[in-house]
Image (tube, rainbow, N blue to C red; front, side, top):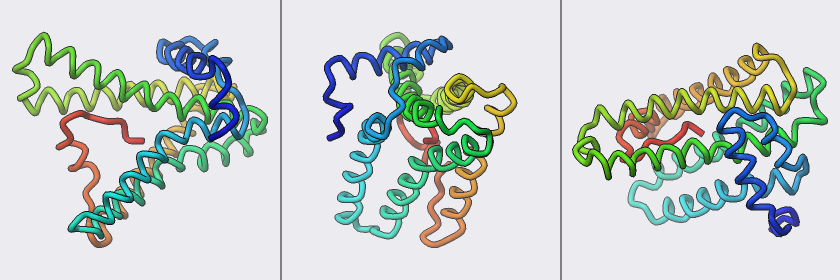
Length: 207
């Protein structure tokens, strides 16, 4: 457990920062610490899920496909850090990188939470919608568009770069992500990521 994660009020501070950034308020960036411990705390929940997934994959009948999913998910989790650090170094923003990537990692949960909340609300108000595949696909598209905007905004504010550079950064992350998806589909056991996402009962963000 990182020292950052046990500080009094750290969880509340991070949650407030997530909400502020989700609403387009740049002051939310100040709620995140630019330290290795803070970044480790942001990664911890996703890595914990991956460990659980790896354990389940070892027990699954189709181990090859299950392990492919876990390994691909691991790459997707670490990909934004690798790509953004490359650009931060290139643009002379290394001193701001840790705070940015910490905020960006936590912000991934905002998309998931908003999507789940929208699904639950739709189920309560219009139950018939949940049985229609068109609604879930539309929700997935909306969630993806919102994620793109949010990560673009966090990159622009967190690294202090122009809107164009923030676009270049996030576009690079998306391109490498889809390249990994294509590689997973081409190589055995031919895991079709996008088809899997579209069949998911609750749409989730790409990473």
